Length: 188
Image (cartoon, rainbow, N blue to C red; front, top):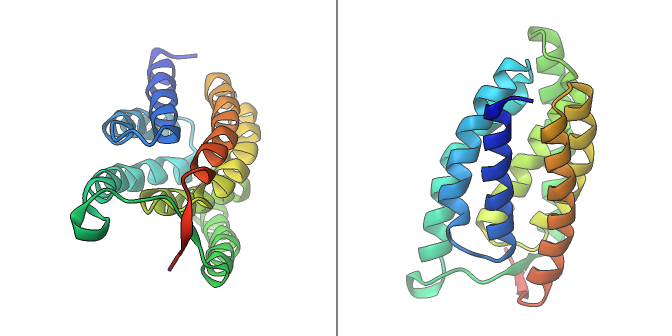
């Protein structure tokens, strides 16, 4: 356990807790977490996860803006569901993207656990994008990501991070339930 991993975990936990509550402060808190975790994952040779944190960095700012101004008449965004066809498309992106990313990491780097890590990364990107749009299904993707990530981080002896993802898993179920209560008809 390092101080950096502890700090990243605290900020990550706070960011997800605030996300469940649809609190706009989830985004700046998330910025701090992703910067810390970019360093942690790079040091652990989880390059896919390190790259993911860099992408998250930019998505934090997009989500922050979109939640505040992306609704009708530049108001806050409501929680919506995806149409079935859109959900199918995101599932295909997740499966194909994971396979391609895993192959690239296995072939061109010394990445630890390239395929499971690729699934975590690609499905996290899908989940994060859907989260920035306030799509209920983002929580379904987060649940899958969290379950796989727990094993990946435990295998890399990132025990605090594995524990954090255990808490994230619980929060994802809570987020799903909380957002269902406010969900509006399907979006595009």
